[in-house]
Length: 137
Image: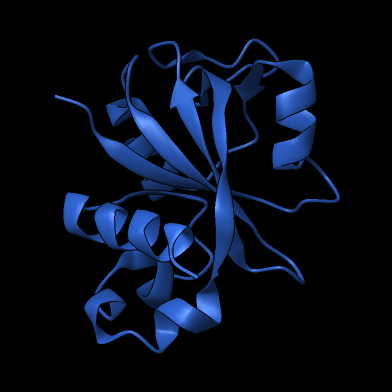
């Protein structure tokens, strides 16, 4: 079974376009305990929404998780894990945080409740709504 996630990044640090250009990357830099717990639950074959933080605050693409979590080779502490990711596709239409805040179906989701969390699960129902919104005019 595929699990769905949302991962956040400041586009000036690393953007979806940069991932497309590189074709694959190591998703690292996560230190929050809850975000690390979520990363440890990822598995190869899962998919994630790539969310640009900062001034953008919007879902911009879909990425694939292409490895199981493993210790970050740049860290001495083995509890800091990373996963390898690849781009799947950019969204046709970006889905903004403002649009999600206006839609009551999102009200209990971590993105709205724990806004600083950088990695979180996406319930299938929420995933489907975001994909549908990204395909509508």
